[in-house]
Amino acid sequence: MPSVAALAAGITDHSLGNDQIAVRPKAGLGWPAVTSPTSATRPLVVVTGASSGIGAATARALAADGWHPVLGARRLERVQAIADEVGGTALPLDVTDASSVEEFARGVRELGTVRGLVNNAGGAKGTEKVIDADEEHWRWMWESNVLGTVRVTKALLPDLIASGDGHVVTITSIAGLEVYDGGSGYTAAKHAEGALHRTLRGELLGEPVRVTEIAPGAVETEFALVRFDGDQERADKVYQGITPLTADDVAATVAFVMSRPSHVNIDTIVLKPRDQASGMRFHRT
Ligand SMILES: NC(=O)c1ccc[n+]([C@@H]2O[C@H](COP(=O)([O-])OP(=O)(O)OC[C@H]3O[C@@H](n4cnc5c(N)ncnc54)[C@H](OP(=O)(O)O)[C@@H]3O)[C@@H](O)[C@H]2O)c1
View 1 (cartoon, rainbow, N blue to C red):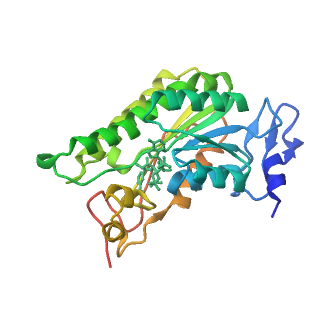
View 2: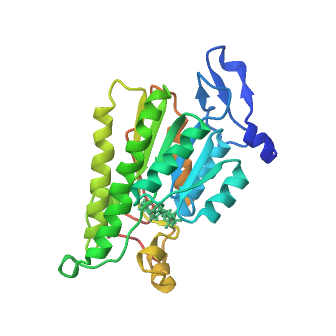
């Protein structure tokens, strides 16, 4: 295993030729190296919502693949601990607050030109049916999943284009592709987030930026705990009798799509536990 210092420095591999410098520590996931035609330093990737679950795992996986992750979340001490562990940078970020996003983008720019953005911050609140719809829950879900994603993307897109080889990955959900009883606020928000992300695919044609939507099914993280307002017993029931995806399963998928050569755009990946057919159909033992 390389030391943290070696991870932070990255390992330069000149075997790809003069015009391509691969920067990748030995402890990567086994994909070909991240390549950068312009820089011998590790390319910058922003991961929003990196304080837990999928975002934290993604920051770790991308660091192991040679990226310098910039981890954003409201719980700064958590992102700081992960950044220290992987040789990344932690910055405070509340995606529901326009000035926080502006300040975050300024902090990213001070580090260099960002090449990757993983829009991951978000989540769900409640499972009320439409007849009992809770506007506060709807507002929270729209602010964090939809407006949060558009704010961060808008703030960083000029830099991603200027990098000459950018990539925007958005973690939506199967809730962005289907609906389920009691899920209207979340499915509506994730459909909207998916629509805004997929719009980028056409708008960025001709620009050096790839866009990938990753839509997971059930992943065991703090997601259900947040959805049920800290009720651990209720949260545990979501994963009872199934083998859910782990945050690392999703992170490895992000690392995979981001490690493809620049001309390869993986548009969408849907990944679910084998035990899950849809938002409402599970095989539970
Ligand atoms: N778990 C699943 O089954 C599942 C399935 C499909 C898709 N997803 C999606 O995957 C993404 C990550 O969720 P997860 O499962 O990893 O859940 P999680 O463990 O609860 O993580 C959510 C992350 O989002 C961050 N976040 C929430 N509101 C934020 C805000 N206003 N500003 C900045 N960061 C914010 C949280 O950080 P702070 O609280 O520290 O700010 C946390 O790091 C979400 O978009 C979720 O909708 C999850």
